[in-house]
Image (cartoon, rainbow, N blue to C red; front, side, top):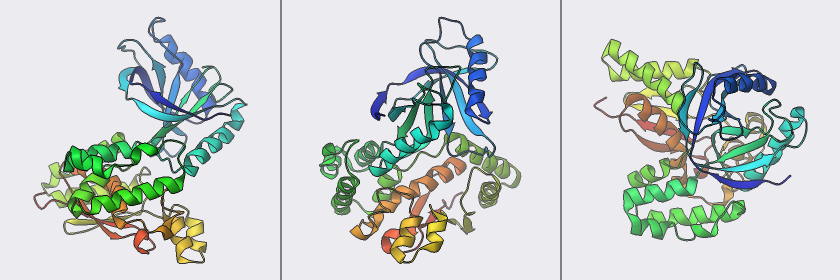
Length: 351
């Protein structure tokens, strides 16, 4: 099996959203969708996108469809532009029930190189009648961390400073070792330390975080807007959002707490069993950390500012919910020797 790095250009697609119980259900769905499209519209193999962060608890939260050459409207399908993306791709060559083994190989490759994914995966089907069977291409969506960093640096500090901070990044590629990535990020943060204050570091690095799904953010905003329309009180509306996050299965974290205009949030451990059974502080912190770049290098001295990246997960949630900027402080961090990473999300006073 050969894992390939591919750049996929932006493309026009016609898709519909479904909750499917198993991949075998996708074949009949594709047959139904194909019947709704004119024959000259479809331009390539069908595909499915699976959301990792979702309120769906029974089955797969899937968007299923075809690449097309023009906008189409049918009773089921809608047309949108699928953004350009980079992927790690591996073609499955065995029975559908062994697809999990192909995914293990794909994700092990990414993990060994500290390559992180955006919060969805994609499959392309050579045989529309047998999704998951031979010819299915599993795609790991690569999160463009360095690209987001470079754009944030230029936006906040300018092009000249961006070039200084990003020096050496051109030596990294998909095949680079974790240690090489770690040392470059560590050096980058040391260069940034003399060129940016804490607020600027937060603004830049929080923009590098995983992309929290827009559909989930839209739910938060709808809850906030509805509560605000009833109470005309921004803090009460935020509490409604926190209540929703606690009740909705799309948020698996412990409910954030609010004290005045500050929300305190922390994720649970990445590996709860290893966290509970850890024999040393280092083992416990490693079991807690979600970042493959950090968790096996915690004794190598990464600056704490790196955790501003993690704060961006919450920044997208709460700025999306309230429609106003927030600032986030790192309260505790495994990089400081703490057992958890905890953030203080500061809401605007004019909420």
